[in-house]
Length: 377
Image 1: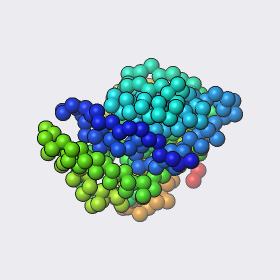
Image 2 (image 1 turned 60 degrees about the vertical axis):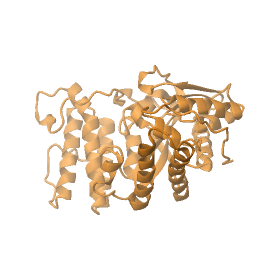
Image 3 (image 1 turned 30 degrees about the vertical axis):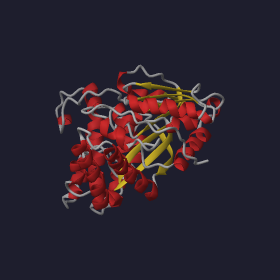
Image 4 (image 1 turned 120 degrees about the horizontal axis):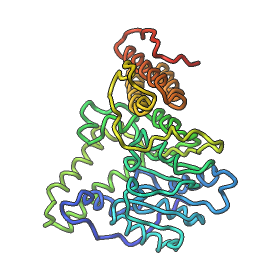
């Protein structure tokens, strides 16, 4: 289909000083809050419904965390799927309700203002979606496992994340507000999903045309608002934001940034959900804790997400440095360890992989380490 869903644009925005004010204004002219286009959205619905386990196809349900204006949820509803969409932004939710009503699916699309972390979310879902909102599930590293926990066996997860197509400028990501653990390369982004206990089956990437339209629309919506409201008390901040979006896109983000949605299946065979880490507690220690023999199995399990993230980050830097084969080998070993070894041995193996990656980055041959769990290439 690929058609654009339409409803009357909302002129209701948060009051000055509200943290969601700028993003609400910037997205006032669209129902899709990402660089994806209508054809991408319909394609995601097609893939998800086709990939569902046969036993789940009769009356599927969908949960969309961070649903924005409900565009994807409404597309599922038009295919007969009943769903719940959650977003912390009440202005987006009001637009989503209008969109569902205009599409004639308000009876199949429930939309609610809520923080996912504060909700008692149902498990056993047929389809679970988190696109551009993985912070609601603990961040990009922990979100796949959290989403897997919501799915029933044979269910389908859709996880949307930005990724680096090429290394950003040294200070670019930090200046733009992207933390060092938020984005990585495309391969590592897909591997994060696999490490969370889901089986990737498809990746839908935003096109360059979709990116250009999204970025242009974002800045233009801010400019249009300021033209219509010349006395807005935040006009300087909003104008500065529009300029920053335009200049950073032209200077470096257009070449460096990508966006993808990984479609993945929760295996139908029962698997150990103890690997799902859906708590937001910080690990007790940062580095080299596993050398301390006082660390017990539970403490080691708490450390693994941080150790795994460090290995993936080191592998990404190694790939950017030109050693792609070594980066892929280290990632593959890290995934195997992270999936199977939630104990002291697994933590030591991940530390050994990080040591190897850092040695290669420094131009030294990696030393043999007893901490490294040797796996087949």
